[in-house]
Image 1 (tube, rainbow, N blue to C red):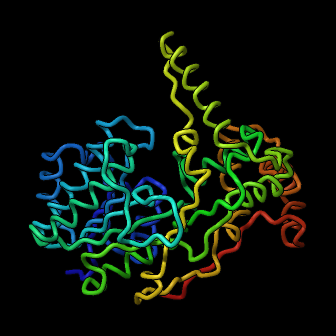
Image 2 (image 1 turned 60 degrees about the vertical axis):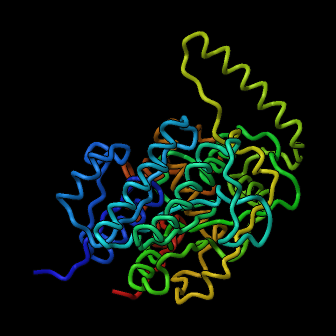
Length: 379
């Protein structure tokens, strides 16, 4: 017999789900299943029913999302139908359901609270619309079927292992790839950010305290917003690049450029070539609008930030090194950044040809291939 908790994590291969899966499974020793879409398609209600007849978890965490540029059908089936079918399973089993939502459901503005959200209209993008519908239906299921849920709204997420290159990491890619010649924003634009490393700690905390967190929505983000222009220029300066230049491109000109690209893509598609609008252009308007999530409700709860010192700026060197190494290995970018910051290819050559010298340089502090590690003492 074992007293270990057994959970199912949906979307365990993504940025957020991967962090949750790793922490629960490797760090804390939970029994975790994180089925991929081949083992469990949340688009298929029959597949969900069959899966949970075989497995009876103590909780379900849904981190799955369709790609941000998915068509309406895929967004609806994964982000809404899949989410609600999982919630109905959780209600039937009488177990907690943790739903990872997004600041995309919120309007622009400052001090945005959990009660705030955009109106549900046809004009909403597929991603925001499907996430908002899920939130509203989860509240309905609490009243109608006794669902024990918690909605966790994330801001702009940053962390390792984002294989889709979305959000903050798309911004980082655009700067490193030199595809952002000017600043696609305006002065004073602030955004909230979420450290994915902290998310598993919050999920474990709320699973252990259902009376406090059940049936509620929480914004999970760093307490202080970040100026978009300063973040972009900081990345540029770390990499020793000349672009983007410190010139603010007006939104009207950015929209004109986006329209030109859309027309070009239409012409390319007519030739039978598959092409899509760059994801950063899908959210162009948000680059020019402040969105600051209030974390007051989170701070007033019993949850304590395990790593309060870790912010997007504190993590930048580690994230830049991780992603640029990965993108260079995948031939997604050319190594045009400042080699004094780090040079993965040079380190690999030193490792191959001069391991003694490399080791001596590391021990002497001349080469620093490691990143700072902060571990909690909790078992």
